[in-house]
Every structure is written in C-alpha cells, then in structure tokens.
Image 1 (cartoon, rainbow, N blue to C red):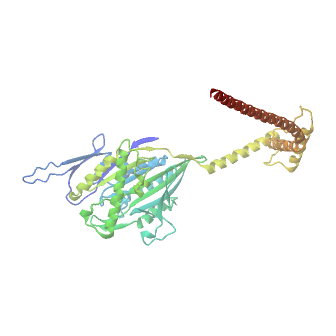
Image 2: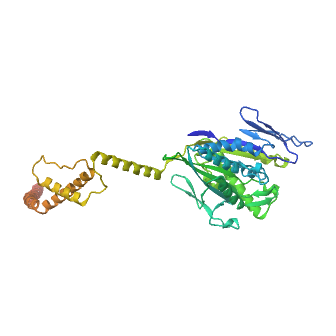
Image 3: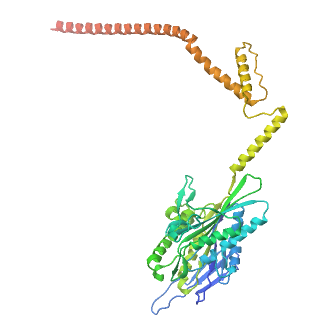
Length: 494
C-alpha cells in the first residue's frame, strides 16, 4: 500500500493580451510558487483594505513558455510508470473555460509537437510493451462523456451517431461492496498504438463542442479516457490489473460575465453544478473526522470515487489564465487546488490469480500425478472402475459380511476408488439391516415388552385414581362432621 496526497501542478496559459501581475518561482525546495498581485482600486475618500497578494504552492508551476513534452515528462510519465507497476492512476485538469485544459490533456491538431498527455501516454505505454519481454500486456480502452449529467459511450461500435443523443447512455451500477460499475460502457481492445489513437480520434469526433464568448471551441462536457491494463509474466497465474484515468473536465464559467443564453446557458448550469458537487467532495475529504462523503451527488464524482480518496495515485493540473479579466477565476482555481492537495489516497497493488490459468495448471498437475502413479503401480488407472471390478468388489463385501471370523479383512490394495466403493456398499448394507429387523424380529420382541410396560402403567394409574377418590371422600366426611359439631354447640348455647 502506498499512501500519498494528491499531487498538484499549475500551468499558465500563454496570452497575447496584457497579463495581470503574477510571478512564478520554482527554485524553492518545497516546490513551486505562483503569486498573483491585484492592485487596489484607489478611490478618493474611501479606504480600501482589499488583499493585494495571493500566493499558492504547487509541486511545480509551468509558465507560458512550457512545452507539451515537459508537461508529460513531469506530470503524466510518473503516473504511467505506477500504472505499469500495477497501481491505479488518474490525471485530471481543472480550470475555467478557455484556460487550456483540453490542450493539455488531448493536445492541438496543428503541430505534432502539440500532442497532449493522452497521445503521449499511449506512445509511452506501447513503447514500453515492445521493449519489455518479461511481461505479457493486454490493453482495453474506454471513453466516457458526461454531458448535462448523462453519460454517453463515445466508442460504441454498434452506433454510427449523427448526434450525441444517438450514442448509448451509460448508467452507474453499485455492487454490495460499493464498487462502481458502468453499464453500457464498452471496452475496446487495442493491440498497438495506432489502434489506440484511432479510438481516441473516434471519441473526440463525438464530443460535444460549442463556441462561447470565452472559447471558440469549448468542450461542454466532462470526458474520461481510461486505459485498462492487464499484465502477467509468461506462465504465471498472477495477474496485475490497473487502470489510468485521463480526465478533461469542462470549464467553469460565470454566466453573468459571458452573457450566454439558450442551450449554452443550460450546459453552463450543469457544468457549474457538477463542479460544485466535485468541490463538495473535495471539501469533505479534506476535513478530518468527516463520516459522509457525497460521492453520489453527481455522475462525475461517482465515477471518480477511487481517484478522490481511494485506491489510486492521482495528479491534478490547475490551468490558469493570467488575463486581467480572468484573475478572479484563476485565484479560485488555485484555492481549489490547495484543498485538493490535502486529500490522501491509499493505492494498492492490484494483483489477482487468473482462474482459467489456475484450472489449466491443476489439470496438468493431476495428469502428471496419474502418470507417476502408473509408473509406481505398474498399471494404468482410469477415473472410473470397470463393471467387472465393481462386480468383484460386491462379491468381496458379501463374503466379508457373511464370514463370522472377526479377523477377516478386505484386500483392496492402495486404490482409493475401490476403498470408496466398498464403503458405499457397507453403508448401504447397514441401512438395509435395521429396516429388516424392525419389520420382523424386533417387532414381536418390542411388542411384548411394550405390552407388559403398558399394563403396569395402566394399573398404576388406576390405583392413583382410587387413592385420589378416597382422599376426596375423607375430606367431605371431615367437613360434614365439623359443621354438625358447630351447630350442636350453638344449640346448647341457646
């Protein structure tokens, strides 16, 4: 078991506009520091005590010039290594809309160097598979989209969806052990990097995207790309099953600032509500002695239950925009990240035994033992006794039971099949014998004894009844004589 807090990183989105006053410092031993400076609005005649400086600590802060490769090497690669070792892992990006979450997780389409965490992780994993000859790896991929609190399978092979509502809806099921299962979410096998990337592109084409005042291509849903990995050594019955969640959360936005309406407004409401429930879970997990964690409030928190305070190694990327109009949202994102950093996860090594492989191994071991036994005894044995052998054993048991000699034995040899059969025959004989005796000899014996006992019991009851009757008569006579004496005394007194 590995206990560790959720790792938090910050990434500053490049901007062409005049940025707010901020500073990045990664030279400290305790990690990186991101500071925002918000000047006070000076107004004549008023005193403004508003806070000016906001400082936040992260594992590392990536400034505007940071490349995608450095993001992967620092954030995603350690998580991928843990997944290869058999632990669950999660990387999720959080921030306001238009702050660079999708670019960080999925990447851009203009240049090859703009690839995000998901395609780079796939390349890294399959490269490791080809170089590691000591393990056998099997991978499956799922792609879940949560749009307006409804889950959709982006990789369902049976549907060619023209719109999102045509995709199969995913339902959450919970077993008695409180493990979450996603119904109707398909797991697609991928044998190589090309197949995995094709699945990623297929899912991305089905994602819900809309133009908003904050972002020309804003993702209006939460998307969870999951790599399911199974590994084992050749010939070993021990399996390691792990999964890696790569999560692109929809961005929060202030409706009053963006001024959106219609369907985009409805989407914004659902996005903000689900992020509010996520914040509730984070707050509950960061508090000590909190008995109830509200995972069931939303679909996203239910799916990410293991990633938040469970069996997982989790990393968060806080994407911030340093435009002056977005400073308030960036500070809010950093505050959220500080609360996330207080959560402790307990990651377990996911090992189990392969039942099919164990059965095959046991069958092989049984066959080897049979062959060794045949070499020792000099005869080939089958699982079942032949009819001739069964008839011979029945005759031996009959002779054994009819022989009055107490030293008589059954010569069966070191064969458990014959021993089991003889015990079955003896058991059947023992069950038959009492029935015959109860139907013949013992009946007369028990009947005469029972008759004698019943006669004695009847006479005893009769004597008890006579004695009781005599006692009642004596009590009656005594009562009568007493009454007569009282009357005589009363008469004499007169």
